[in-house]
Structure formats: C-alpha cells, structure tokens
Length: 357
Image 1 (cartoon, rainbow, N blue to C red):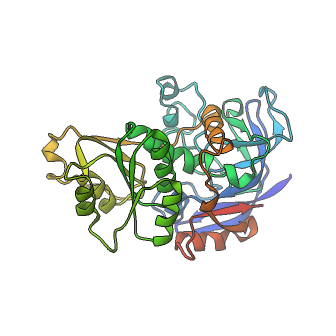
Image 2 (cartoon, helix red, strand yellow):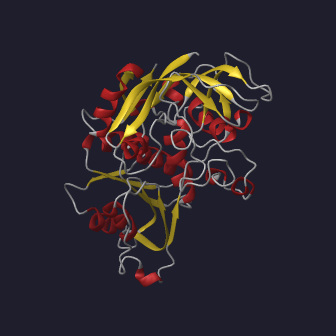
C-alpha cells in the first residue's frame, strides 16, 4: 500500500506528522498532490481542543497542487494540471446549496451535520497538510490556476481571501461608506482589501501590532488605530462626527472585538462577523440599543466552489490586490510541528506560513 506523510490531530495540544495511506480515488473525486498549503487560525482552535475533530484526522483546508489522478466521472480537467480547491468544497446537491447557501452544505452527507456547514477538509474528512489530499465532488470544486501565477499568489484563495472578502460582501458596503475592520490578521487584512474593492471611501483598521497596521495600509486602510495606544471606540466615533461607521467587520472572534465593532456602528448599520468564537458572546444592552437600533448582525463562512475560486484568482491575476506580503514564513511539511509552534504562539511577526511537502 502506498503511503504519504500527513499532519494529524492526536489530542488537544498535539498535532504531529504521521504516515497514512494515499487515498483511493472514487468516480467523483480527484487526488491532488499538494505543492503548497498553509496553517489557519481555525487549525489552532483544533490544536487547542477548542474545536473538536476526530483523533487521527489530517488537518488543513487550503490546498494548492497538481492533479495526480481523476475519478472516472470527473470531466473537463486533466492529470498534471495545477489547481486549487476551496476550503469549503460543496456538493451542490444538498438542500443548503440549492437554497443558495453552498457554504452551509453540511446536511445530507453521510458524516452528518456539524456546526461549520460545508467545511470538510480537516474537519469531517482528511485535509491538506499532507503530501496528497482527496478532493470530493471534484468537478464542482477544482479551479485551474492561471498561467503565470505562483502557488503563493493563490495560496490565500481557498480560505483567507474568500472569507475576508465575504465579510466585506455581507457587510452591505456601498460606495462612499465608512468601514471599521477590527483585527488585522490574515482574514482582517483581506476584509480590509475587500472593503476597498466594494467602494468604501474610508476604511479604519484596528489592531495592536504596528507591523500589521502597516500591511493594512497596503491593503487599502485609510486610518490605522492601535488599540494599545488609544480608545478606538471613542476615536472612531470622533472620526465619524459621532455618527458611527456604516459597517464594521469583526475578524478575530473575541468578546472585546465583537463588542467594539457593535459600539461604533451607526443605527441601521451592519456588523459583519468573521471570527471563530470559542466561548459564548454577550450583546451589551446599550450598544444594541435594547434591540431598537435597526442593526444587522451577520456571520460568514467562506464561500467555496470553482466559480468562487475563479473569481478570486481573477482579482489577483489582474493585479487588483497583492497578498504576497502575507506569507511571512516558509516550512517543509517535515517541520510542521515547528510551524505550528511558531504560528500558534504568533512569534516573529508571523502572518501566514507556506507549507511545502
């Protein structure tokens, strides 16, 4: 039996490299030889035991690679072709997909329903931090990489870019809006870039790390605020003449950032929540105007599918955005445990780590 190396969840606090069989390919699947992948903040939630997965599961959900083998029923692709697939790989036959919410394609599968909807890689099936990954429903999910784009240029498309952009899309941003983005990690940076592309005239980026605020300006932020140095709620209200922002995007998943995003929101504004929360949230009565403020609170799980991936790669190919500054560290798959140690402790200015088998 042919085997491969894969990073698997062992127990809370431990993800380790293990040997596993190379997956067999079914009629609607594709086997992808991974050329580059990365570690996501959600993987750290798994590592810490804050999000439960089965022991032995291969972790990771951001694949860039080459088609090694195609299932007999997959048409329109060829072996040897460079492709990506979204972290969310919907089937497009579930109730959720046919109701227009493909990211929630979690009901109707044999594995049952989990709260994270259509997120399968590294959640309900083996993921991408390995030498190979099996892509289900491949014809719906494989997206060819345009000639001339490198792995690292498209590495953010499967999750980080799709998630950040969806936060801006769901925030109902209109031309001329003022938008605040709380937390400038990888997803927050992509939300900042997405807000600019949506037509926001003033984007206020909030973080506690100066280097990230510098990158936020590259991504389109007009104003950067360090919450360690200023009361950001009061400063945002001052900047908006007391009106509040038209939209706020929360990109960390903490009570403090969620509450601040709500407190700076104008009556009738939208709070777009992208964070993965590991404890219950409180909604403050005053900030919520006792439920009378016409506020809109919406959450997003990154859209997947080949058309979403095609559109995101179009944005990169036409130079509307450059996400290359976000790849700050590079590791081999053999050193995945060291990469997790760096990323989970947020050392050395890490934003995203490129992992290559």
